[in-house]
Image (cartoon, rainbow, N blue to C red; front, side, top):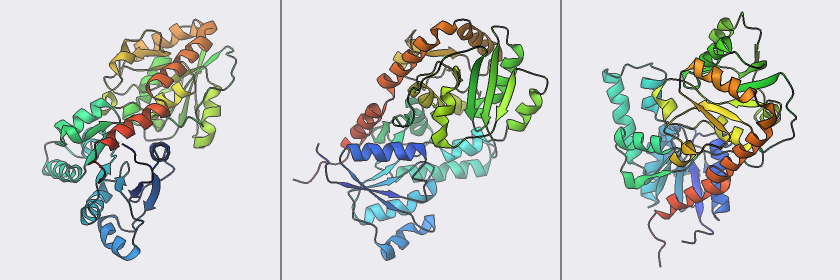
Length: 356
C-alpha cells in the first residue's frame, strides 16, 4: 500500500546515531515516511510529558532498540491517540541480565519478575521487529509475542560508509577482530587460536575495549603474533578494516551468540572482506549452505577450528581479492539496505489498512 506522506514518531531516550537506528530511519525515508522524534526527559512518564510538549502528529509510534524503559509510556500515548506501536528491541533485557551477563540467576524471583515485566512490555506492541529468525523465535517462545506481530528485519550496514576500498594483500597478512570484548564475541577464543596457530605468518589484531580485554591481554602476554589497538571512531572504521586482510566475526558460547548476526559481520561483508565467523542458525539457511560466499564457518567456541580456518585462508593470499568480491556479493544478496528496506516495508504492510 502507498504510505507516502505518513509520519513515524520515534519515541524514547535513544541514540539516533546508533547504526541500527540510522539504518531504519533511512529505510523509513526511502519508503516515503516522514521521521519525527520525541525524547522524554523521564522515560516512565513520557506520555505525561507529551501532554505538555505535544509531539508532532504521527501515523505510527516507533520505540527503538534497547528502549524497553520507554515502551509502557509510548504504548499509553499510542492508545490515547489510536496509533499503532512498533517496537524494535534488538535484545531482550531478560536474556541480557540472566543468560548473557549472568547477573541474575534464572531460578530466582528477580529473574521471574524481570521476565514477566518484559512480557508485558512486548505485549503492548502491534509490531515487534527481530533482527534474525532465531531472535523472533526467542521472542515468541520466551516473551510470548504473537507470531503474527513478529517481523524479521536484518541489521545490515550503512551502505554509504561500509563499502569496498582498495587494498593490496602483503605478508604477513593481518587478521582483524574489532568489538567490545564481551562473552558473546569470544575474544578469548581468538587469543587461544593465535596460540595454536600453525600456518603462514599472520598478525592477529584485536581492536576495541571491553570487559574481557584485560584477560585477553594477559593471555596474549607471551604471543608475539598478537597486538591490541584502542577503539577508533565509527566513521573511521571502514578505512581501518580496509587495511586488514581477513576479518573475524564472533565465536562465543553464549545462547545469544547463536541467535544474532553481529554488526561486524554485516559491516565486514559490506566492505568486501573475507570473513571467518562462528556458524549459527541465525543466518539464512541458503547462505549457510553456500560454498562460495566469502565466509568461512567454524564451530563456536573452538579455538583449534579457528586457527585451522585462518591458516587455510592465509595459505592462498592470491585468492583474497576474489573472496572479498564473494563477500560483497553475499552482502548485496542477503543484507544490503534494499533488503532491509523491503523487510521493513513488509512489517509496515501488516498494519491496519488506510482509511478509505
